[in-house]
Amino acid sequence: MTTFILFFAALGIILVIVEILLPGMVIGILGGLSMLAAVILTFIRFGFVAALAMFAGLLITTGAAAAACFKSLPKPRSLSQNPRESKSPPDLRSLLGLEGRSLSMLRPAGKAEFDGRPVDVLSEAGLIQAGQKIRVVLVEGSRVVVRQI
Image 1: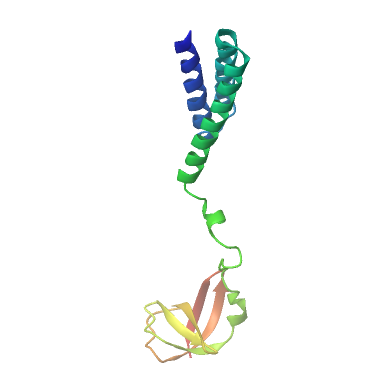
Image 2 (image 1 turned 45 degrees about the vertical axis):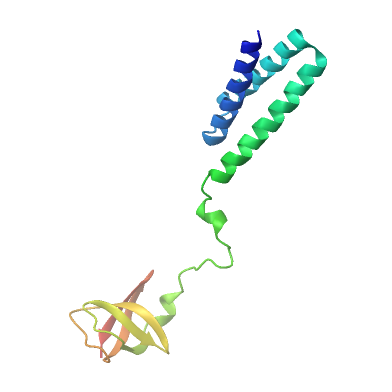
């Protein structure tokens, strides 16, 4: 009988931990029922005080194991970043029609400067040497297309 009590207690703890790692509710319910069976069998075999001790022991053990599981799981990116620190892409539509100069050779991609602000750009056609005057002719999302003037 004691073997069954220990089996149901251990099985219950393991199933609850599996439920934490792979949520779905069925395994957690089976784990809870298994732990309830261990408490009931303890009550039948050893009495109320032993059943109360078994219940408290299962709660503490399951809680400690769950805390250890939660600590070992990787944090999702959205929770590990401060929302104020997240960088949203700058609004590049304001660059349309601006003139600037290429900071690097555009073959066809490279860096350019508009109003003192460096921007990744793409040349409309061919190579553009560094230091050349350019104009923004198209902005699509984060893609900025320039033409040499």
